[in-house]
Image 1 (cartoon, rainbow, N blue to C red):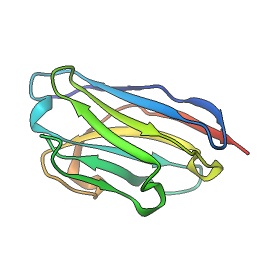
Image 2: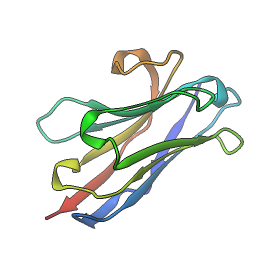
Image 3: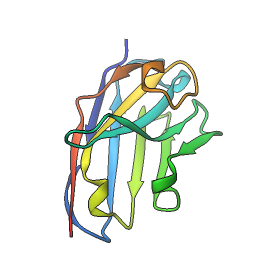
Length: 122
């Protein structure tokens, strides 16, 4: 069992930056692929970025490449999402998730956090 708690969301102007954190409980954090997803009102939840258990492999959706960076610290049981050059279209609830395989499909993730709101004003 893994419990995930996100933090770091908030209101920011376009062009600004935020860093999201996701703290995990459980001793097996280092074995999981970690993903960040987001869901805007009226839209489906979509993948933002993923990172493999050892940090060696990463995936970013095209619209955030070059602006967002995913990283993890297995010693702290924490995964991060550094977001820069934020745009109004990045506004959404951001969720972190843990899964057993490196995947961009949300149904491949077994554990989810409660989400943190990110709002980017124009």
